[in-house]
Image (cartoon, rainbow, N blue to C red; front, side, top):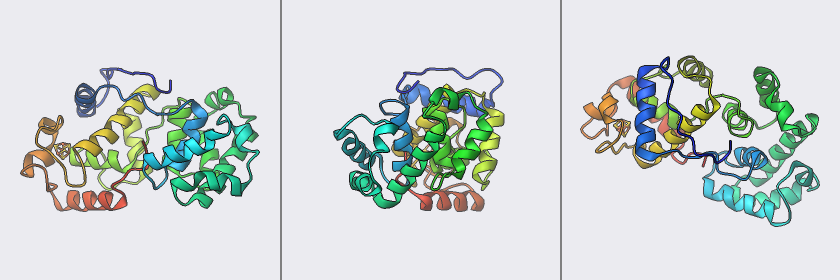
Amino acid sequence: MIGEARSCLPPAHQHPSLAEAYRRLLAAYGPQGWWPGDGPWEVMVGAVLTQHTAWRNVERALFNLKADGPLTPERLRTLSCEELAERLRPAGTFRVKAARLQALLSWCARWDDDLDRMAHASPEALREELLAVPGIGPETADAILLYALGIPYFVVDAYARRIFGRLGLGPAGGTYAVYQAWLHHELPASAEEHGEYHALLVHHAKVACRTVPRCAGCCLLPLCPTGQQGAGGARPRSASARMEAARIGMEREEQPVP
Ligand code: SF4
């Protein structure tokens, strides 16, 4: 599924506002074809490397990793932690990321690097295992499950919470788990749609719904109370929305995903 152009329309049972936002984003930007990467192993590695850095830095590290051979778990496991760290230097915190990558590779080895077996395991159990790998948090685990293994877990990143919060949707101030449970309840369990929706949200957050939003001409403006109320959308509509926007904005403006 990696890199495929997807144009799935939401089924009728979807939350009407979520469905309408999805339709509008897809119409405005087209299918995003995420996750960029050459196969599921590159997606897994990229999901670790993209923590707390911009994607352009990840691309440089991926280039280094692929310079002397294919990006397979077998080959990566032949590299020492120091050798791995040196290649990951452009992605920042490279020693930490090298250790995290080695931990993820060890976990993959316990599955005999069998992606098909992983993809057909119990999703809940697999996610628990991933979360037990040092340095793998919910966002990284869900990116691996969704984009590498095709298992429908919504990646609830800061961009998603920012946009849904400004649209007045979702559990304001909720934890990652609460937000994800809401999305899983409201959206069909489709990896294709989860992936496309998440990718569209990231793109929208970069080009329009930034920390200070650019609401003029925004494709979601007809649905968005924040944009309609905020004279161009510069101000969230309530004290709680302002706190939420500030919190999300502080978390990171530069999202650690492509
Ligand atoms: S109208 Fe403004 S606040 Fe609302 S989604 Fe668009 S850019 Fe974001």
